[in-house]
Length: 285
Image (cartoon, rainbow, N blue to C red; front, side, top):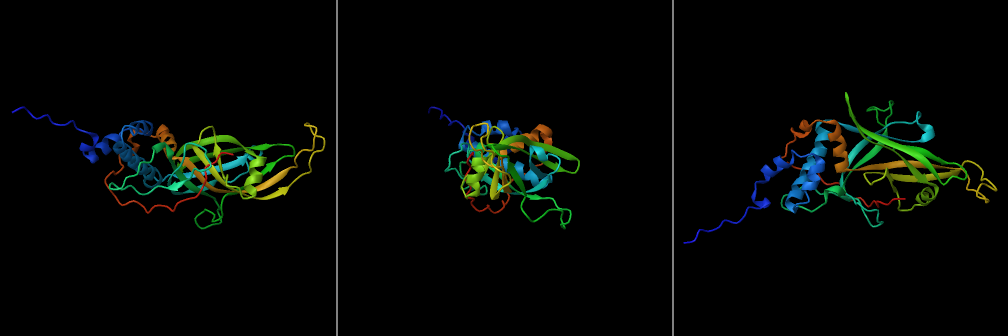
């Protein structure tokens, strides 16, 4: 009788535990590339990413500290503590219909194909306050944004770092423009409440704009030969900070040795309950 030829082994034929241990040796950037080979590898990579985020924020005890200020207010602004509220499915594009949806817990029986580059971590900024019992205020982080007469935008700097005693990991620092036209729309209740910091869509700020008030007269016969817009001030609440999950992990890996993730437990464990779905449009102004 002819010898029966055994079928070729597929990824799905290998023990999942073995693949998890192998893929966990990869840095995040390589893990994202490997995840494109099959849905099976992608699902394992998504699981590893979630474990790495939990390891950095909960096991290692890092906290995200955020600051945002106008260029003229560099030395007179508060730092804000950022409370992690979950990981969500975001978008690479800035289409108005794009949403931030809740990422369900990992389930080996009901895995969902969620491209890794579209996962965002979400944080709620609150100011530090020495008068509070835990040193953190219960009120939302906020600031006043001023646009001078005749100006179309103001320049704002935002930065964030992961910190714990004796260690700091810079996450981002960038100047970006906030336009008068966008602030007016947001103040009137527009849906465009996310602004992106920097060139890509790695970091976004969800802003709640209110309290517009005229702070100076309009300029008559300005440089454009017409009446310029008056100086205005807006009250801005920082509702949330969203950071691409893979970007955040890459920033950690730039400062930490390869052994940082070796203590992660990849065995199946109960996940936290999923966060409620957020109806937040990701739109660049």
